[in-house]
Length: 247
Image 1 (cartoon, rainbow, N blue to C red):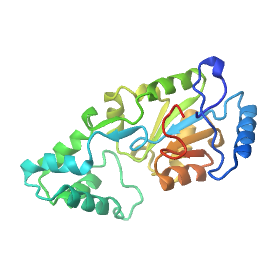
Image 2: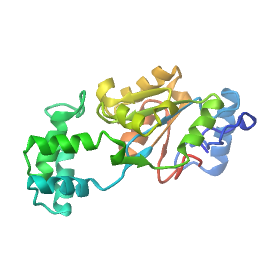
Image 3: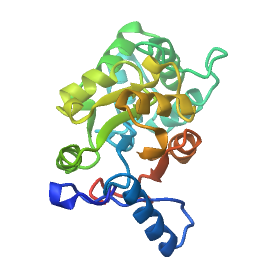
Image 4: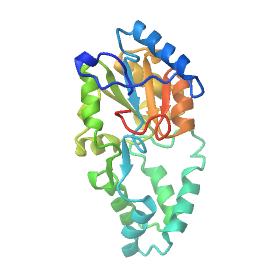
């Protein structure tokens, strides 16, 4: 589990992760130490990555780009779209470390046009709007809601920390999960992207906790693990340290 202790209060036990290579005896000692500091909780707050951890696309991006693009004359195969998409996504963005500002349209227009070779504005708008709906996403862990509600009852504060544009709020609303969280730290709103520790510190500020009292869960070692630790948070890698929110 993520936040151990407070079992009598209905909390789902959550394990503590001090260091990836720490022996079991050290982890146990560290867990007991943290619980002694925090009234039975190993952490006071849980920070969660969005895309790839809380949410995953319902269909592969290259498939959607091609399926929607066929009527607009997109000819590339899914493999070619994926290759070009990855190249475009990783390019430096207009001399800035911040790809997403506000709705992120300029960045995504560049990615879509590069990935598909299609410059039709109607194609971009249809694709862009698709990813703002619940059709484009589903929850990684179907039990997430139950776990998060149990944690909140135990007094744990929850926040999403995500490199995303302003569509994330309506996406979470459409999936009926925005109310699970006490705060959303979205890069387009904060003005900093993971692994910049600023976005993690902003999430902690919004929750009213110190960074050393928070643990972050995400699927990207650089952005989520290194970034969170640089901010002073604990961090667990989704798919390695934890495989579900019940873990």
